[in-house]
Length: 534
Image 1: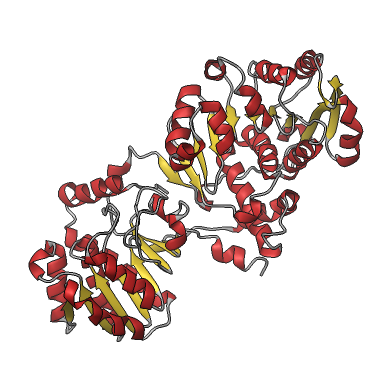
Image 2: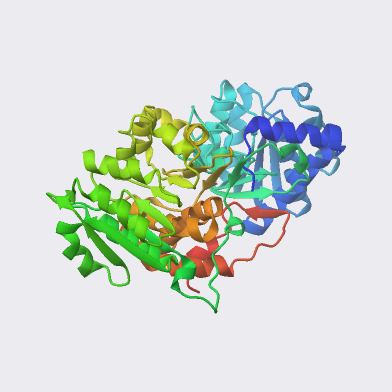
């Protein structure tokens, strides 16, 4: 599903009207009718207050008010204007229609704002139709006071398209805004609906099909991952372990043995046929005791870290082995020897996943971007914000504020698949596509969850190919965490809990079936997760 910024949505809307020939009033009718259906389906209420602005978002609100009126609800409408002359043409037309159906409207200038207080207190729900996705915050003037009243006195708030006062394109909060329990957005979701902290004020988000012509969105390569987008690997009856790949995991050092153990076990749980871990020989006993299904190959080490001869040994292991992909970096530490290991692995002729200390070692190589660009096989990098800062030289705050742009530019420069990890994970591809995942939760903000992801990705990039493997790996990882949080308090979740629930994530995804509807929840798995298992 496409994820649109404000100007992209406006472009598609305008061309659907002017070139495709669907009148703006028809689009507004589609939006308001289906939005009202969501409200009637999802909420138990008798009375509603609609607070409308002067633009087309207010027009959407008037269409909703009409359908609620027809459904027998007690509806009061307030338009934040002292004159109907200030209304957009479509807003004005729907005001006339609403009044023809017997609805009454109060125009509210700054001096009359207090008239909204009692209706807001008494109504079961408030519908916020003040500003739409085209609004640029902050809110100014008496509308700021109106939003304050909505937040203070409303029992439950439904936002039309976006909670008024929020920025459509970012996760930044700039001034006052409404705090919605439900947001109903039109045609496609927007970044504000998924990015923190803004998305926390959107509540449950629903997307309404209003007949926007998709041909005007072909150039948009920004997507929100849906369960129907996820391609799962399939095991054949007539097969053997080598059919499903042999992942080589390279990492570990004194005090960090768990990272390789978790990566190896998650690879097995996500379907790798064989997993072999290359580890410092001084620590091999730890790995031998912890890894049952997985194998180990010890190499030269010193003081619990990869030693000088390990580089040559790893090259020989790869040359002699029948490995299908490599995941490297988990807990390997950073020194001259580990940096040289990463340099040599950039030459291997198979898919390569670089994680954790692998990334920190990579950042020490002067010409690493050129070396990545020259690789002929898929490369996946999985940095968190701090690691991305070391790779790019960009400050962490600037990366946090511009994850999509930073990730996309890095992939373009290096030819890699970038998995930039944060409260939302952003995937960028060498050919300019960007995918957002809304899977995962605060319980996953703990040591080791990245190691789990590296093992899953090492498996999936071989079994599904680079792009599909990265999308599936990221989604499966987050979904495992979401299912885990259903049974384990997020304060107590640990990384290994994700491995336990990988099979359940597979089951849930395989059982999911998408069916067309004029509206659908932004997160179609939320209810399934909350009721899992039935």
